[in-house]
Image (cartoon, rainbow, N blue to C red; front, side):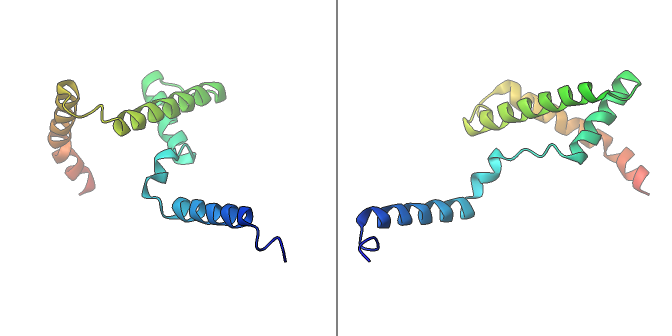
Amino acid sequence: MRLIKDPLLHFVALGALTFGVIQHFDPGSHRYEIDAGARERARLAALYLQQYGAAPTTDELQKLLDQYVRGEILYREGLALGLEQDDEIVRRRVSSYGLSRIRMAPIWIARRS
């Protein structure tokens, strides 16, 4: 009975409850999850096959996955720091990519038909 009245127990219980609620409802928690599952492995293997004309070995695929995860971490941290804001090079790259997507739209539409 004395343990239930202990302020340390109340502090620990309240802290654990607060931590659990924050972890459950935190919208930014996905920032730390990188999906490198079967779909991403297939995409990387297809890119490798297209580029080199042969399927990657297990070691090569693991290196590709490591590079993908490392790049994704750096990309997300850069966004979190706001490094993309007011950067002319990033602006040009995104607009160039958008323009190439617009130019490719008729090809994608024709393939779907």
